[in-house]
Image (cartoon, rainbow, N blue to C red; front, side, top):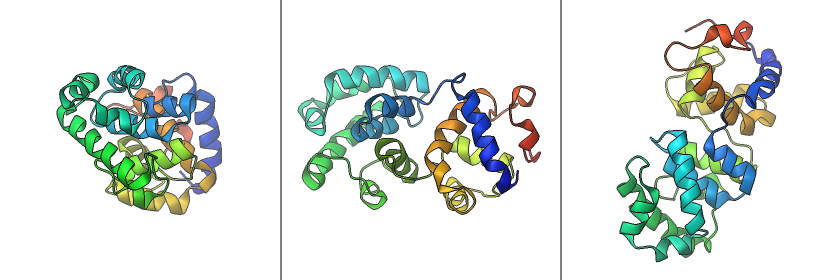
Length: 213
């Protein structure tokens, strides 16, 4: 895929996007515009299926509206509230620390710079960029396994790690697409461009693919 193909590819993916299931964090962002909820969902979604994350987040936010609410919950109750997400016991402890730091250092608000977000427990570049993009609408490229895999399949980048992919995409991808690229490629990667046996016959952008599977 050439850089000149990017606008058309993005346009085609947007046309098909509504037929695919949007990532749960994106749905939360679109419905609430709440950086706190985006951050929590992003942390809970790690190593957890989207369907499970969606159910847990729905239950969680009926009881938790702020970092203060997390601190009020006994650890055992917090564990039960986020079960069955992956590593729920560790994540419950992580959420407790997260709430303490948000209250102590940021007045209970989710910070809106990457540097500050990376100070939070459990937050790496992927989650930080997701919060910036979907929580604050600040241009940032969230590179997860789907974005990393697909952009390499396209031959748009040739990288070995998500971190390398993020840096390279910042060079080749126009900034206007930084926010949208993750939600499009996660949905596309879950339904069409899957890790094993991608459904190339159903792919709406097959003609643009790098053919380097």
